[in-house]
Length: 175
Ligand SMILES: CC(C)(COP(=O)(O)OP(=O)(O)OC[C@H]1O[C@@H](n2cnc3c(N)ncnc32)[C@H](O)[C@@H]1OP(=O)(O)O)[C@@H](O)C(=O)NCCC(=O)NCCS
Image (tube, rainbow, N blue to C red; front, top):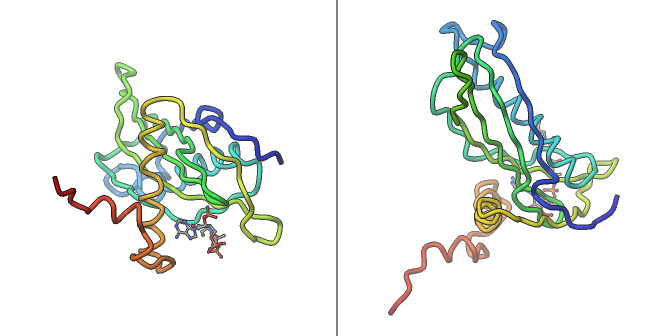
C-alpha cells in the first residue's frame, strides 16, 4: 500500500442502524455496549480507508452517552480519521439520532478511538499522513497529539515528563 498522504474527507465512513429489540435494555433503550460495537466497526472502516491495512483498536476515549436512544430510532454514525502518527490513527465518531416524525437529526454522542495498522503477524507498520482541510478537521488534528500523550500515560506507556504537548496546556505564560 502507498504511503501517499490522504485527506480527512477520503477516510469518511458512514453507518446507519435501526434500534431493534435485541439491541435494547429492559427500559427499551439502546444498550451502550451495542453502540460501542457499532462505533468500533464504523471507525475501523475509516482507519482502514486511510491506510489500506489491517487495523486493531488500541484505545477508546471520550465516550459519553448524553441521552437515551429508543427502540425503533434510526442512528447514523460518521467516522473520520483526525490525525495519523507513525503506525496509529486517531478516529472521531459522531453519532446522530433521527426524529421518527420530522426526520431531523440530533447529535447525541461523540467518541474517539485509536487504531494501529499491523502486518500479518500483528506488528505495527507505517501509515500515510493525514491532511486536514476544514476548520473542524484542523482543530481535531491540532488536539490529537495531546490526546495521544494522555492515552499513553494512562496506559502506563509514557512517562508524564516526556508529554511535552500535554504539559504545555498547563503552563501559565508570564507577561
Ligand atoms: C495496539 C498494539 C498493536 C500496539 O502494540 P505495541 O507493542 O504497544 O506497539 P508500540 O509501542 O510500537 O505502539 C504502536 C503504536 O500504538 C500506539 N499505542 C499503543 N498503545 C496505545 C494506547 N493505549 N492508546 C493510544 N495509542 C497507543 C503507540 O503510540 C504507537 O503509535 P505510533 O506508532 O503512531 O507512534 C498492541 O498493543 C495490540 O495488538 N493490542 C491489541 C489490539 C486488539 O486486539 N484490539 C482489540 C481489542 S479486543
